[in-house]
Amino acid sequence: MRVVVWIRERGWEACVDAAAALALDPAAVTLLAVPEADLEEVAAGGRAGLLGRHPRPPRGPSWDAVADEAAQGVLAAARDRLGGAAGTEVRHGRPERAVVEACAGADLLVLARDGEARLGPKSLGKHTRFVVDHAPCPVLLVWDGPPPPVDTLPPPPR
Amino acid sequence: VSEAVALIALAATLAAAVARPRLAPDWAVAAGAALLLVALGVLSADDARDAAGDLGPTIGFLAALLVLADGCREAGLFAALGAAMATGARGDPIRLLALVFVIGAGTTAVLSLDATVVLLTPVVFATASRLRMPARPHVYACSHLANSASLLLPVSNLTNLLAFHAVGVSFLRFTALMALPWLVALAVEWVVLRRAFAPQLRPGAEPRSEDEVQAAVPVPRFALGVIAATLAGFALSSLAGIEPVWVAVAGAAALALHERRPPRALLRAVEPPFLVFVLGLAVVVRAAGDHGLQSAVEALVPHGEGLLALIGVAAVSAVVANLVNNLPATLILLPVVAGGAAGAGPALAMLVGVNAGPNLTYVGSLATLLWRRVLHAHGTDADLGEFVRLGLLTVPAILVASTAALWLALQVV
Image 1 (cartoon, rainbow over the protein chains, first blue to last red):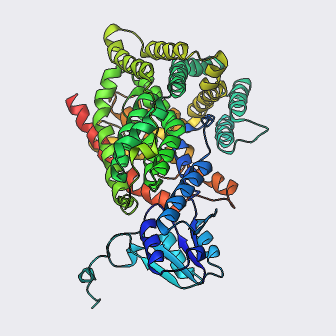
Image 2 (image 1 turned 180 degrees about the horizontal axis):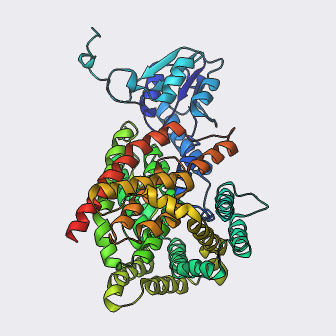
Image 3 (image 1 turned 90 degrees about the horizontal axis):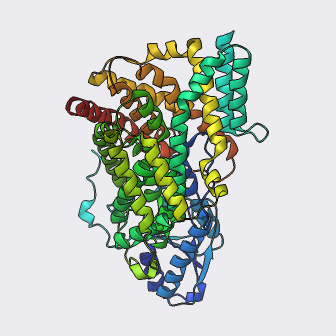
């Protein structure tokens, strides 16, 4: 049994608790983080007003290094919460694809909803949607926090 | 023939600035194009000198501001701001977003958009990452505010400096007229980003405590004092009859001396190639303007100081800024909007367009956008759809609401 748990800044506690509730051998669990690498590109959007100016970036760690360190931090916290024996892995690339690739040969993927806190398709962000749609293994999809009550279900279409 | 030559020179200069070819840096292309236009007689040497000389004080002003921002960075101001945000957020992503808004808008207004883009944004990213929060809303806020929060002071954006010089209002009057439009732009950004990123802004199950996150960072009191004194100097300059550029020079010099910045570092902060680029670009735009571009723009831009006319000016300016980038757009539009009998209104409405407009198409101009797609065809691109969607939600609303606020301010101030 090999279980992959997708660890993100939001919802990782719920994922870890769900994995722990399965009472698996912790050594069979891989905690996976994929830093979002496009934020530096988003920030470059602000350079719109700097035509002709090419200021040097300030000294300090690169964006990737900062993101990697943060990912390692969350993974360490997740491992502590699970009991210490789980493996950790940081992958790079498009997060949704990296997660699907990491699930090759796995027996279960655990991940959390990351969208709106109500029942319905919008409770999944687009990366989560992609992973759920493409996962090559069974998926355990948990709520980050208490699930919305079932009476929030929208009425059926007429 | 002159018209075609002038337009080709302008196109070549803009292409070099966007594509940044290794063999022909943008500043060399701009300077070469300017010299060529004079040599060919498309623009008389007197007109070229006039166009460049007109820009001189503005360039000096910008250089002083760049040195001031560099001194603030060296003094550790941005590290201290990061620590203050980490502490003040108390583990709540929405509180952090609010702090990013306050600090981002303040940094942009006082130290110009360059400081926000280059110096503040990486600090915000690192702060959110250390707090284990999704950094996307906060990075987007910085990236948007660098443009839309650059309305307030003449020093907030090079475009403002150009208009400030051309219109000839006092520093205080410029600020008084733009305060309301600036606040309205911030409000629009807040509402849109807060809603668009609601899932990422939920508090985490177990927020990290402050001392886990951030060692104490000393507050650079001297740098903050210099900024406060410089701002006060700007406000008083018009009363005392001093050009505000000298206030900026004094502030920059005080900080550079205190931080013992070597001359080489100062020179690097000023970016001499950029100053050459702007001068060359101004001459090229003048040539293109004299040979038909200005009359074409004149026909395009609404005239008058009524509410609808101002919104029209802002909208046209935003479109032009997205087509050719905001600096060339300002140089092209300024003679048209600052010349008439309508007062400062049209020029300030143009600023709303060229400053807030670039958030619409990701990197501010279609040309830059397309070129980046070519360069990054196989890399990790930002999600273009997300960027454009947020631009569409904010920019048109800011154009209308901030320009309406400007119209209101013009009636009152």
